[in-house]
Image 1 (spheres, rainbow, N blue to C red):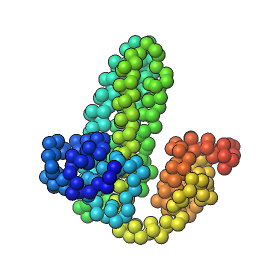
Image 2: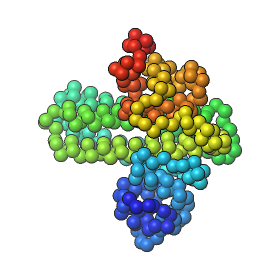
Image 3: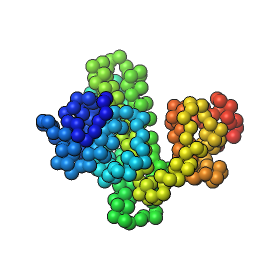
Length: 312
């Protein structure tokens, strides 16, 4: 996509990436753009144009990471608005559509097959509900208080990252079950339809998580502590590693993760901040392609970083 900016036509933006229609709908932006620009339409919808395009860039480029300067100019209230509407879309539209299609697809299955597939989906739905309820009940009110100058000492963005569960893994497992394990008696047209829905939801959730991790969290760190950006630059040499191989420090963190230590325990053990532990863990996941603690434990054992007998 060519460079996007507030003074481009909204129709041109959508023409370049139709997936951005999802972003428009969650901000309540209706069609019929005419020749109006992104800035004009955002102003009409009481939305900061730069923040809107920040979200659009995540949907356009999955590894997009905004600079501190860009984050400082963004409006966290618009980010919260987007995330809240996304939660509503996932629970009241996307999952309803999945449930209806799964029910039709598994109709020819045996009662046992129906039960296990439906239970798996129900568990995933419950997990997603819990995830979003935490954000709606803890994170969003915390941010709203911060914007009003109120400090809630019982919560922080560190606690959010500690409890930030991965919401894509079980959906990926559901996709593989539908793709590989359903009996041939199932209608293949329904199977393909369901897989399309799952792939679309998976991509959307990836963007949702990226917006939280790469936009909301660093924005909140700046609000919580305005000196955070300076400290981050000072710590850059330790935290960042652009190579694909694990650094010595990342291997140490990997071993601690495999041993079952929590982020705070790892921070205390290695005399580093929890923020630095989180950054190392993100780098380890990016480099290895492995997200779960059990997976990272197996990786550490197979690569000789840890003995199996030392694992909890």
